[in-house]
Amino acid sequence: MVDVLPERKGWWNYRYLWRLNFALLSALLSQATGGYDGSLLNGLQSLPLWTNYFDHPAGARLGVLNVGISIGQSVSTIFAGFICDKFGRRIPLGVGCWIVIIGSILGAASTTFGMFLGARILVGFGDGLCQVASPTMLAELSHPSQRAQIQSMYAPSYPLGGIIAAWTTYATFTYTTTWSWRLPLALQGVFALIQFTCLLFSPESPRWLIANGQREKAIAVLVKHHANGDEDSELVKFEVSEIEEQISRDALMKSYSWLEFFKTKGNRRRFYTMLFFPLARQFTGSNLISYFLPLVLDSAGITNSKTQLIINGGVNICAFLFAITTFLYVDKFGRRPVLIIPMVLCIVSLVIWTIFSALIIESNYTRPNLGYGVVVMVFWFQGWIHVFDAAAEPYIQELSTFVLRSKIVVMWQFGQQVVGYISSFANPVAMGTLGWKYIILYVVLDCVYVAVMFAFFPETKGLSLEECALLFDGEEAIAHQHAAEAHAADAHFELHKAPLESDKSSKEEIDHAEFGGATV
Image (cartoon, rainbow, N blue to C red; front, side, top):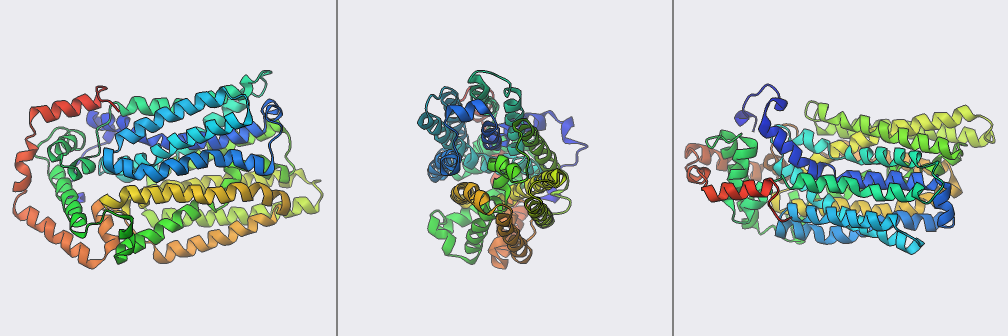
């Protein structure tokens, strides 16, 4: 891939990359809805008008509100993989955006606890569709020279949404009507509206197009968005060659069902890796901060509602600033270091957090400086766990073949929801019962995650999606791919010359889809 990438001074000097990256905002912002929701629930717990309106939800009742969005995400995630494979990436993304918008409006109009919970389930359903389609679109449509950086920006949209929600609830704290909580709920749909607008300018995944018999259209997309209109681009020829080789190999192996995860060594390795990631994301201690920060602050002796709202906003800003810098070094240092080192730093923060919390209890809450020490550790932890999240996104896409990619993302998203169910009910109960001792569990689990990544995760730095997939499949698959590439080079890509001169109607159809004329 490096050999065929054209030299350029900076992507910002090229209009075609601005156009492509603007379109990719439709996928990049999908995590913002989830981040907004997590921070929103934190903020609502600190709004007296909301807690009074819904009769002070706590314990399992509070947990079910958190699980509400997870239920919706889980249900839609089950079907989202099939929809993405059947209809492409754009349609489920567009439909998901509108469902989130409708759910946000219903949430703002809630008059009962059941209606509020139902609106959260609806938002979760739409968000689940978006979160399966979006990572796949980013992986398959981003320019190869920017793919890892673009994908590493996907996770930071989560704390970005959290920032907006945290400071919105802070701004409405002084409202004396129910708009103090209705307005933040209504604004939850803004990110989805922005996504849908950008989606009108986005083409379909060229890999999906090739796999579904639309080769000429796929080449037209690659020529326009990866080669600035150069129909003789070696980059496009290389991409098409690798995509077709991967798809043909999957077709020969009939790698289309879920059972394929258990038929080869490489696919079993993918399966076990995807069991790991949801645990490493949801069972690290991050959910304590994302959804139950007021409980954490209460245990540290910080009970003032306004102070909690300010800390909630600050934590999200910290997480976003840490995470967004990941694109600067995810390609420079590789995936393994940017996954392992942040997890180690999270362990350090949890250990100090545990010690400070124990000392606070021992002092009978008479040492407030220790409480703010806990806050510093919360900031530190939340920053580094979001760096881990940002690096995980490209790695998850890189370990997959084309036909398993949607299934991999389904495992990633569904696994997070299942683990999230457990933590959503366990965290408020365990924090109320065990306090700081509960954090020790996360220290132990995070140490296990570090050991697993160090022992079993290969490095994928500098490889194309297809080359990364071969890394998981072993030497025989790599030799097969190299032979195919050599054959294509010897033949001077004769197979691709004619299709590169795409007919006018195909190009007009692409332009129509990108500039607002398509039905999503």
